[in-house]
Image (cartoon, rainbow, N blue to C red; front, side):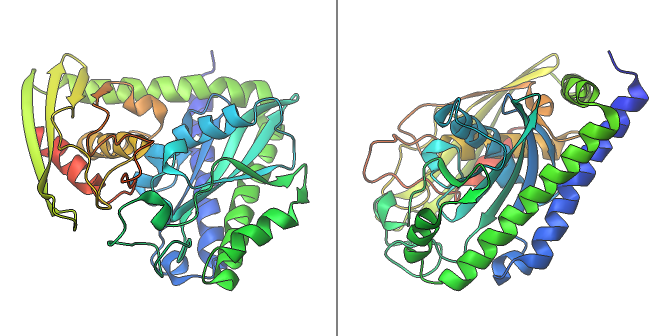
Length: 348
């Protein structure tokens, strides 16, 4: 077990890395949605796909990232090498919605992936049947844009030019897309270098061993906050006016049960999935629940996978908060994330 001072120092060093990754992204991205609106996020996960550190960017992005890391890890199991860079944007593989492209860089210790350096950024265009990143007329996810399942863009440091050409050919602004993608990869590679320096300074055993204690400490702080709340069953509801295709008063209903130091968030009574682009993918929904929880606890609590262990979420497949993956009418976007978080916050 590490001493508390070392754990605290490493916690803040990891947070400093993701913040610097964000500053690098801000200064090098081409599109205004990134360099002005700042619609991107940076994070670090460990080899088990647990969120270790995140910068204060777009919370709905980061809460879904562990599912994306697990998807990349599982898809390329045994085929991840130093110098690799992976991409992903498909909501059914851990993403929020198609415009949010994600870049992953693995960081190795003794031949094993110990960390992932990650940048998730909203693209100004991702293909599909309309310009820009949103298509309110769409009735199936393929109309929204190019779906990128876990994909290797750099293989052991070598760029796969054919893949890059395919990606840039399927968007309307290839110049901006390529510039933004380079900024994303540069940001993630910066995280890789800073992690390498941290591992060298403190030793890999110390840094990797600190992760469990960082997550456990965040869990303890979160549970202490919840313990101070009154036990009971609470309900909240938020409603979307319509989906643009005939479904009106689309509801998200949250029943939150608080017992001792834990919460159960039940969203199973939410509206059935709809035709329009307001359905929420499973990772996006989980992120929204965690985001709501993060707003209610002590703001000084680090936001990582340990923070959200006190929260259990119940969902029903085929609802707006967990649409069926095979259904052609399903659109997995993040338009109802605010309403999900609002329903949970209303309940509490």
